[in-house]
Image 1: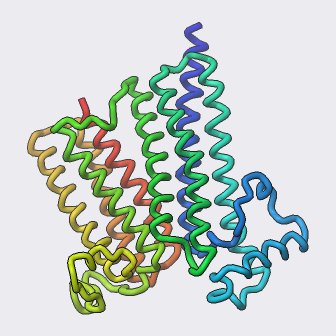
Image 2: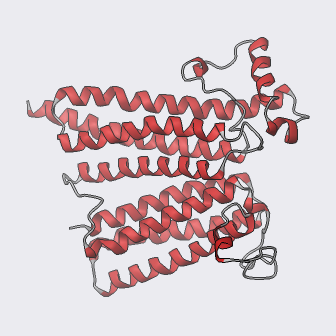
Image 3: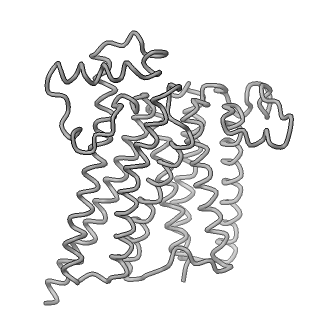
Length: 341
């Protein structure tokens, strides 16, 4: 009986790790789909119909004709050939089908673990919430795509940031659950005690930075100023006029959004250094290793951000910048987990 329980626990943790890997993979593919401007290539929802790719010239032409009706084709890609269209189509096709696969991969084992009654229900309740977020994420994805089919040539940067943030909530929740299960604990993430607030505030800052990163990506704001540390020849972009307090919240202004993204990075770096100072001062040895991971991924993220900008938005560096942002989230969540007693 004990051996059977142990096998199920091993299956459970391996399933969570594979789920983490799959969600990480779709975040990478989603980032590349955005970087290659491929997200609007499939203009219909196609919950079940789109599982198979086009298998005939007629089918390919039908998809291409639908794409020709949207502003992105008419204004930007009017010279595109069908072979070029196939490239952007497959990026979006892979992204959508990976999402379908993740949904099934998470649901079917979850049903099995539910009926075995061998996994602590507290862990399963978290899994139910994760699956609900995965299902909601599918609708958010279409909600995002739909925003780019009429009047504009790209998706709403607000909806893009929502789509990315939900993905990060999903992967962070899976990561937190893995930490709890491996260590046989059930630490609450939303423990709002006074001693946890500095770490929760750091996580809030990171998610705020990721939102602005999505704004920069969605608005192509990285193309405006491509030098560092100044923006052109000044600290504050000289093409932005602050005529009123409300103008500071114009998150459709490319230069202003890039300015906020840069300076949030400086604030986060300074804030992390303060946290690390107190960890060392109080000799909290259990946090030394998590702190080292945090320093490594923070440094990597900063360097990749700078190199991406000054390279003229090299697609490989831009993708690596997004990947390292997820690793940075992991390192901060890991630090917070081991901070909690």
